[in-house]
Length: 260
Image (tube, one colour):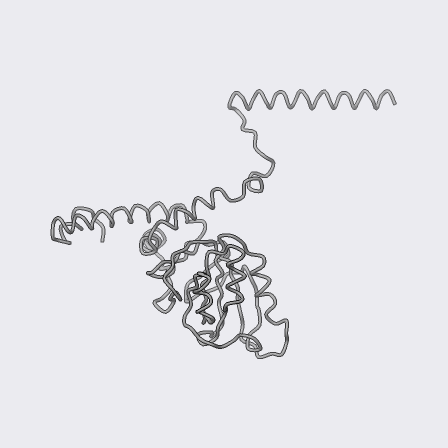
């Protein structure tokens, strides 16, 4: 017993010495003491700052920046339109629906579960197979997303209950407005997987940016770099308006700024 007690005292003494040395090192700047899980302790500060910045740049500038950096066109086509004028940015929560005539009352349960698993700053990105004339969502789903703080929804398919969605102010981009339902015609395939939305690849967690000009998808890994260039392009273009008016020449303004 004496031997075990002595060993316990030694462990306690060793721990105190180690803690003292770590504290001294931290104070001298050689080691930064952090929480064991920095991301869990402060999960979204960087993400929120990034999104807030994206909400203040134009989608056209984001699209141009993406093409310059990656050589890829990451914007959705002219068919993807808002049900009312809106601007938002958020992280993609992806959902895939597959065509499947069925009488299974649980065939679309996963679609609803995905909404309940999302939260503030999510963008519901739904790919509906051959779904131009099928409403991928309506007022009930929009109400749930709004209540959970979603930024908006982008549906590669149709949308319905537009009057109610407009009333509650929940922004939706879709390929069209239709009164149809997906119930008995579709089944839930998966959530938070790579999908293709109006021809553009979208991964869960990518940044979706939308405004009156349309919708652009920013791959998460490139988001800071794309944002920086988009802000630069925005600044140049906004500065050019005054130059064009003053010079009465768009050619001279472009020559001065190098932006078109």
